[in-house]
Length: 498
Image (cartoon, rainbow, N blue to C red):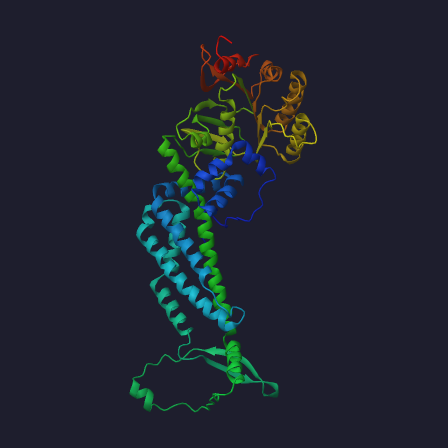
């Protein structure tokens, strides 16, 4: 039994190692805000969502596979939460079954019987949901899951399991056979099934008994019962192991069902919160890594919306066939917010989620990387500029063609000329390796140097500023300017008369 809700033909590997730059990605894109909204206090959902978001998919088919499943989840949120609750209930109930004889066949068998009885009740609940609601789901993932539950969990199956578990309680004693080996030692101990012939109480009394020898253990014999228990353990050993394996198999199914549903429960939680804020969402159109697509309408920073608990400004742009997006303009104009929105939308698309936009289309990237400026750290052994170069060196060692790198005020810790020259050389080298670059900067020489080249694969965005100095938080295409309008902030803080 397999859930296959994250991949068509494999389980989601929750033990998979996170990428080396996960901490920087979490810090720069404020992923904790996103994951908190998905989890809603559920630690397990938090862990799974964190893994799924950071471990991006690299093929279009799997992304679309998850999108279809998520569409079903959004449409049938209550049913999906019921499925998740049943899986959680099954796992928690198994943990509560305890046996003091877990290292012996008898203890293993009795614990397995108790656990399977609990599992059967949860499987019946899953089967009931599949029978009642299967027609309400259209995705390939849920269709296959419900078809499997319907086919494998028939009433005959439940009746057969119930009978087996009742017999394994040994309320009438265990029927065990053995053979005599060398030295008259017992060998080939086997548990035997009791005859199913039904008899009335008169027939049981007067029926002819098969020839047998019976030995009764004396009441004062302390070692006899212990030896008899050892003989029984030998006889039920194979059955105990088989039943334990069956229990482990069903437990693994519930565990993976819970794991994979946790991701979708998190997505539904996030979708509901954004809907309450009036924020749009869409299912993006992913394309192959080799293409250059990046167009969107109403794209916004989902973490800013969640933090402010209100609708925020979105942006529109068609950056198809572009490798470089250079972003300049007024301070406090929404540049960093836009950059974070780009990174979050890419990660959300590549894990099979919806995107925070009215429409979004982009090529799959071979990893999303960030290089943001850092605040002064008194524990650093070197200066800020050296620290920036060190982080850039680590990125270069890991980044691959068709990846995406987000720069935010990088190399501004030195002077204008030096920072611009270093930025120019790094960006040029990245573009040669087919790496998509988004760069927020106040370095005029850097931005205008690329603008003067009239590059066909570059687009230049500028934070819009109104005539009175007000910010619209919109980004428009435009030539980089020498000023960032810092005086607007000065006037806003100190007043025009200062």
